[in-house]
Image (cartoon, rainbow, N blue to C red; front, top):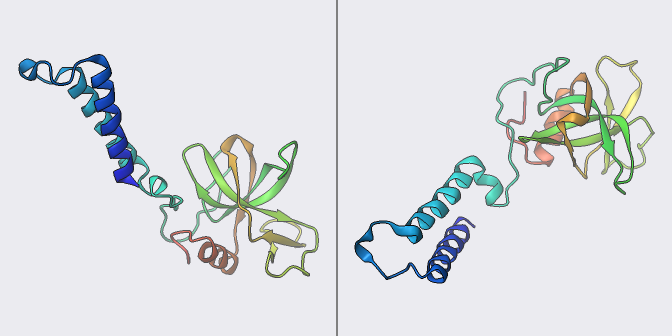
Amino acid sequence: MTGVFLAAGLVLTVLLGALLGLVGHDADAGLGAAGIATLGMFFLAGRALVREPRRLAGVPLAPRRTGPVPEPAPGSRPRPGQIWFAYVPFEEGHDGKDRPCLVLRCGPRAAEVLKITSQDKSRFPRQYRALRLPGEDGRQSWLQLEGPRRIGYDAFRRPVGVSPGDAWDEVSRRHGVAGAGR
């Protein structure tokens, strides 16, 4: 995939230079506009590779963490393995609901989460997993194992706690989240 970006940048640079009539006219003039454009394209491609190498390769970013998941604090940003209440849009995209969710991954502007519901989903063991929310009244909740949703950090309302270790281990393995295990 990286080669595609570099080749596309080179082709665009040559085309730009040809359109401007700057390619091949004065070899002694130094870099010229085409040379500067080429360097610019390589700089942008290299910068993208350094900043998000796995995203460019089509691989989702994994959290950079080792050790136990830290307890969330009010005013902090969500981290993988934590449970938060957040405004999660419905799949239809028109409205949403304030609900608990488990944070899978965190990016620069948004986090990927799995929804948690209080409705009994025991008849769907492949799609849902039983889960007790930390700090809540001890009632049974259900973690949706598939269909992670991406939500902006402004949608997170309040922290609940840390996912139980066995639930986080299962989810992180299932979704390929680095740092699985606690």
